[in-house]
Length: 428
Image (cartoon, rainbow, N blue to C red; front, side, top):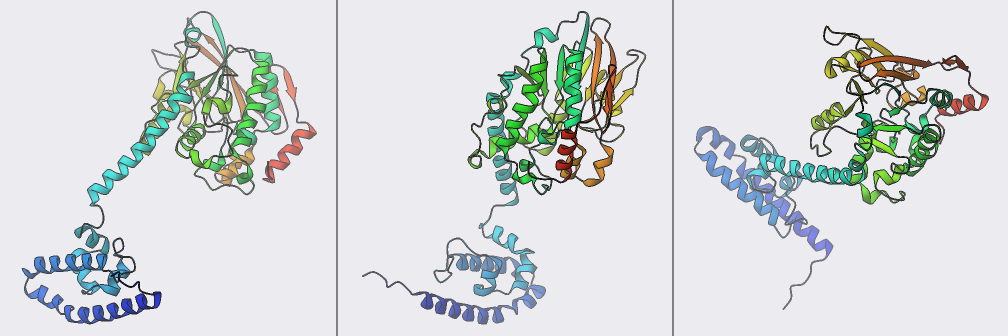
């Protein structure tokens, strides 16, 4: 004959009766604290009794959560030993649970956490292998030719729709005038605030990933390729890395994307773009991911480094040139600069930061006090590949004036209006 199922009121009544009985038991067992002081040998026996009592609570059929709950409050209600004894013998309720085998040991928890992280990193590494790594080294044969004088142009930190309209027009016009052999997109070409760790700005959350990706393709890559037929190197920066990790690990949440492969999203093959990443996407720890950004670089013509960089502050270029030991360029700081540090073996070494292409309003994505520290600009390098000499030129773009190669610019009314929109942080 089947047992009659209890009603909710009957279950609650049984639970209250169990609580009252447990409270009486606790009054009696509270005296055991004195016994522990007088008889240390009783500690082991009491330890076993309390573990057995916790398991009883865990499996008690009158516990509404029998079989999976023995929380601190649940034991306060149903346990036969007062909480002070739990503190005396185990220190914390979590340690009490560990002693009863109801939660993982510290070692097991750590192993489980590392295993879970490694599984996430494995997915990210597989994603990168399929959608990014095929675009490494596409033009390495041409870049390895160490003959003659080469022109390299570097632009960094465009940050997608945060691009300053005036600075962007100056850069595009200059790209046509310079006609470089190599154009370096030196990291953080898009911003991706929806997948970043910083507090999002009002309005920025309205920008869908697909909208931002389409903007990068339509306004940045397409307009660059219209004006430049040479090699394009896209150096992965910290903002690109954040999107790669997000796409690989959060695919079920991305119903608004037309596809999930990084190369197809940005049209890397369509625009014949070579990717630069020097690390390993299999990076379980934050320290490993930081090392990846440090390793992300490429040496051009055996004498010139391009990297997004990791150093910040006014002395960032000093740190980069000391690390690589040759001339180069990096982004990341949003501050244009040329730093010179020659040695007896390599005289005349220089390190150049081209500044940023984003409007200064994007500082609100991080912290507002940076607004007045950042400046627009780009850099051009004339490289004698055989002599291994690098001559940098820096174009600093003011908000209302720019000059390069004898040409001057002032912002149009349309550019000024766009800037006002960015300062207002309106929906893009």
